[in-house]
Length: 179
Ligand code: IMP
Ligand code: MG
Picture 1 (tube, rainbow, N blue to C red):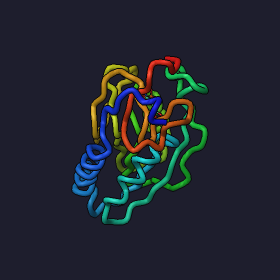
Picture 2 (picture 1 turned 180 degrees about the vertical axis):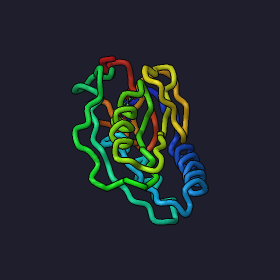
Picture 3 (picture 1 turned 60 degrees about the horizontal axis):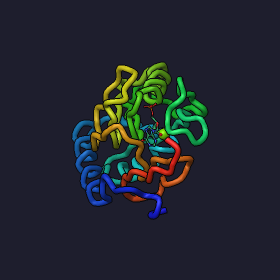
Picture 4 (picture 1 turned 90 degrees about the vertical axis):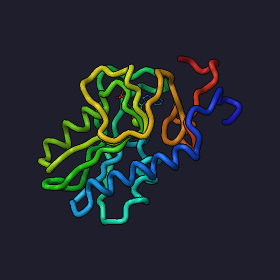
């Protein structure tokens, strides 16, 4: 895998530090509240798993599966589809939706739409990366670890054609990949 990496843009150590800092903000904001964290599969899986292990009080977790890309493309589809929705009852719960990256905004907006219909007390957005430049929908993260430039990145949950999610850092792939 490493031969296919052009450069590491966020190191494993920097991710660890920022995830811990962000968890501290979440702890301060949600202490003594009923919190359900909803991870977006597959990309949000690693971030969610690391984040929740810093949280010292009881939180519920659930996931949604959303398809934003067709096959091995590096550009998103026109609309994101919810392929598998949440199972927990989030009525009167505070909800934090967790994903790897906020890019065009379609995936998170679609997820917020379905969560809001379930009458939670509040809904906020937590992402590892924010690619502001590509935004097509009006949505901003409430919690974010890093701002990134408009380049396709992989690692720590983010994939290209379902590979590279297991890299412990965020990296840019070599050019031979179809862009
Ligand atoms: P959005 O719907 O365009 O905001 O895209 C969000 C989804 O697209 C994320 O959940 C990611 O899975 C995927 N995505 C967006 N940008 C990248 C990237 O640079 N690398 C890998 N996946 C990405
Ligand atoms: Mg994703």
